[in-house]
Length: 232
Length: 125
Ligand code: FES
Image (spheres, each protein chain N blue to C red):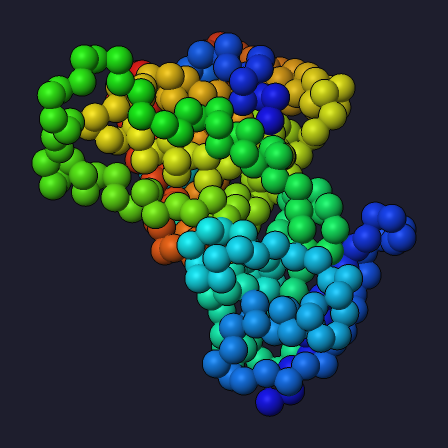
């Protein structure tokens, strides 16, 4: 089949403002959108710029706005997109070039929640043991691949880039609810600020957008509830 | 993301408490407002609601407390909602201060006027 791919392009060296460019490409229904983008870049227009790495939905590099929703280009099939496909960069980040966005702020927010194990106690001679139900408590949020689909689908984030965003909260959740971790208080201090969890308006866009099926809004509510029971 | 590490951290539990207040007041308002609407629009016809009606109602402290609760909860709930919207959309510091000043002033004046009436109302004639 033939598909028309409309791509929002922007080259800061040449363009005053972003523009749309259309490419007509042959594609199999079972091709992933990433294959189509690669075909355009390799065979039609080498100037097209986008990020990708693993091509299997693991690294989180190729999140983009596909037909108006955030998806990983390597995880959507052409047959699910129709014959005209619109591809745009993630919303709410500055565009560096074409589909490549500046994620500096995103990773700054991620680091602000200290996404590593904090525990100063003397380590036991073997592993720090954990029961299956203790592991289950934060299982969902271990799946995050930091693709930024959730954060850039959030209207609160669009209107206010200072908001720490769903992705950072998910990664804080992963440690706050880990029975081996002792850093919950430090992370909750960050999330309890004006730009923390209270910016969330329970819109659920993040949950819809997550390519890993993480229940993002639920994770945010978990943190709000914990703050409520711990600090009031 | 200056807000995350910067000044916003010093605000203690303010956002947490206002968030919780919105939940509690929201539930209470649901019943208070439905009760109010039923009495004012279904049980009684609006034509019947006049000065004498209010005088009769406010003889009982119950209705004064009811109306006071309605006034305080609804105004603060609404004002806090607007405060949050200002925080969301007024990105420039100066505008944020301006809109909050307007908002808090209007809220305070309305709260004061309403409270004064409910507390000091005496029937004339
Ligand atoms: S390229 Fe790695 S997630 Fe798509």
